[in-house]
Length: 255
Image (cartoon, rainbow, N blue to C red):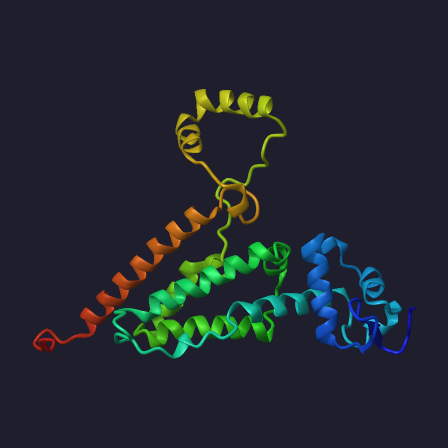
């Protein structure tokens, strides 16, 4: 039964439930996960919630508000229960650099979330204004650096170095569409062999598991973690260098 009073039917119990923004966003996320972001229209979502489309406008102002709200729901889930941002720089439970493991967990949690909600990648890339949930995620990440002993200036540079990896993905280096068939792949390889042998050589060296790739190209789990660990190694080296430069030459560190 379709209504106009802002209520929706619980599909498991058949009871009428008061519609609210959270319920609208959660159903939209479920629909996008099951099909795609393109499948999420106000009319389609109203049908899923068993209300008339105008009832949705009490809770979302339109498609843009809906998609940013969906992204916020996903982003809030990334760092849910994350209390590592206040860790001191010193050892905790025998861990010499808690900032590093906390940052690694945070970024890999973001990647796992985008693998679960692949439509969110396009929303992140197309967003021009950060929402409170996005700002909260960025704030927490910066706090890990600052509480881990990094200066504000170095943290600024490291955030730029992370770039899209902050959200768990890497922009594709060679954004070329995959061939439609094995014959086309072989023909493309033959063309590369003469003019671009080095490109072909590294392409042949890569073997990717399709279920671990996020977005187009070869950004799979192993390559993402490999690059992330390289960055974290570099971050730690920069922190150590910054501390050395800040230490007066005539002052010896305590044993």
